[in-house]
Length: 396
Ligand SMILES: Cc1cc2nc3c(=O)[nH]c(=O)nc-3n(C[C@H](O)[C@H](O)[C@H](O)COP(=O)(O)OP(=O)(O)OC[C@H]3O[C@@H](n4cnc5c(N)ncnc54)[C@H](O)[C@@H]3O)c2cc1C
Image (tube, rainbow, N blue to C red; front, side, top):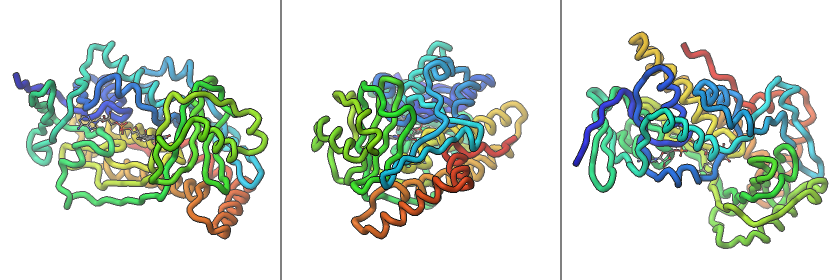
């Protein structure tokens, strides 16, 4: 039988944005429900990001879901850039006093789901939201489906944390949204394998055959990417083909360290940048990939989802604690400032490392840019500041 659930904040999506928001609001006694289209197994099995900025790690600690992240996450104080037969390391700690934490989005999601269920709070899996209604002036309603029946959530506010193909943004009339988009003519072919990483820290590679990235999830599990054509398919790649191509693009010093093994997962992520403005429509707030996505080069997608949630959780908490609406009013412009700051870095970094065409002139310019960037104290500091994550602006 169709049911009606009443809550304070209805959250659509149990990715990092929705889950983290639910925990931060729970801490302040704000009631939430999380609706998720997919099964728990599916959500916990998705292989995605793996670099946490300090701000994201801080929010996990504030949510009280940090034990495994702090025990098992790897603190990285720098990255290496390989180009033109050179490898240059940028030392984040020396330039900013901070590092990043390598901890898979998959693990973060598992921790947030388990902690929410342990606390007896609801996540409705396999419950796709179909529409968000009456969010402009009335009492918002989320229409969702579960076991073939339609139900509704009636709430004070809706947090649309349902990723780039979710229903929240689609519920907003197109003429009220301004969309910005940039599509790249290539993607990243990624492999996850139970093999020790080639290096202790990430290596970003500008190679004449195309970009590559040596990344990891732990001391025994590696995540590698190579730039591929947009129209390429995973079926075109055997494990052996992947390892051979990666080996070609590695700097000489790393070639001997490469340990190969069967894939646990292989996928292609197209590179795209997309922003929808504004991020607030009456009582409907967009957060994370629902409002913006960007090329993963700068490792910003997951971290921006977290920073949106930082601003949104503060705004909702101020509303329930003190009936303040000023932070809700400032949410969109404040979150978007950080979004565009991160896009600026991600696009610049993407342009520096990828092969866009066969023109050797363009490759020479990239090499000159990399030489300057790694050789100048000021440029290294600027890179480090952006990579570890711009600070959250004051929001109170
Ligand atoms: C294949 C892939 C690889 C990536 N790799 C990287 C990387 O290496 N580095 C990096 O920084 N970033 C990466 N990203 C980006 C990063 O993973 C995202 O920015 C991050 O997941 C954003 O979190 P989110 O909670 O906003 O959205 P999501 O994680 O997408 O979560 C949205 C949730 O909403 C659910 N949902 C959708 N529609 C509905 C509906 N109608 N009703 C209910 N639930 C719904 C979805 O099932 C999903 O669980 C990658 C993304 C993808 C897709």
